[in-house]
Image (cartoon, rainbow, N blue to C red; front, side, top):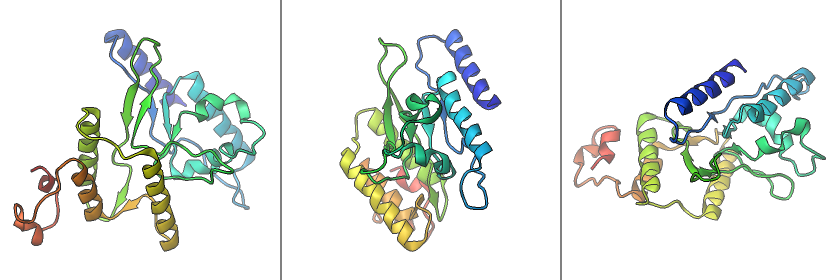
Length: 229
């Protein structure tokens, strides 16, 4: 809780010093306690603690809350449509949850927003929505820096209007397909194959390298510079 309060205090001071510049308070995940009892369910004391944490996101006005895998032990039941009501008055915080690596049965649960880039309503009515992107939240069998760099370049191109995201329905289908494949293989659903993933992003921004231009790709490991033209 102290960390959250400090971040909000930093944002307040930032606005006092440089007012007019849009700012967001974002939680990157692994925010909720997840200790379980012998039956695999959250302990009652942990449940109460997590209720307080979620309520604090309203008290401290956190704009976006990323849901990591351990957080699903607490968050999952809150998304169930059969739930008679959200505990502790946390309905508004629920709508600010995002996750790029989860999916739910639409008949029984509310799905979290899956998008790499998301528009967040500005707090001031006269301000424009703020566009937010998470990069680097993947696991890869290889170097992570080329992945994060290409993701960041894709985000920059989208923000600048030089590239577009796939339709929402297409992104949702891709997420669900990745999760099914990971479950079938017993693998982590956040894991990506290095080269196919890099080539996919690079092809969306015109940065996919050519072996003719970079023949060393046949002999040496891939690096971020290979996608810089």
